[in-house]
Length: 118
Image 1 (cartoon, rainbow, N blue to C red):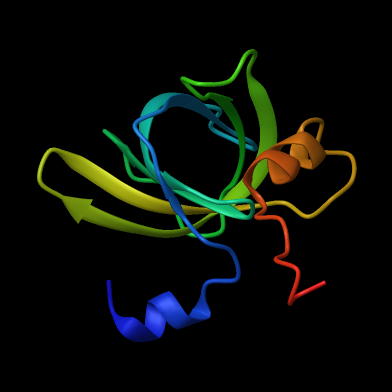
Image 2 (cartoon, rainbow, N blue to C red):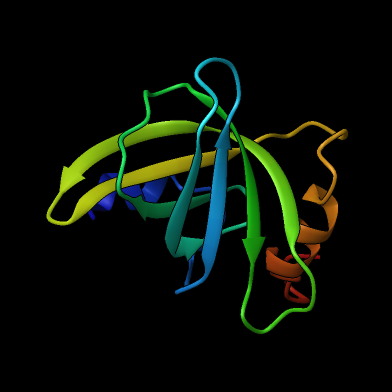
């Protein structure tokens, strides 16, 4: 990843090997099995077998290996690249309050401020 792309990130990324499902909204409706390579409070990087258009709205069902339950989140495809064995996609999560699990997702992944930041 370039230093410029790293500088634009608003939240730290955590490496992941979590599995998830993406369901596309709109037509045609598709459900894709994916593997998350990294996750943050505001986005994910996933690999899947099918490309999705940039801007495509989606729902995500994410099961983290070290957490009970499944997170249901909304988002959209930020970018998509062809890679060996499939497609790598950047997903931006929605900021909306009506997304069922966004608050608990962010609480889990947002770092607590250090005493000097508070």
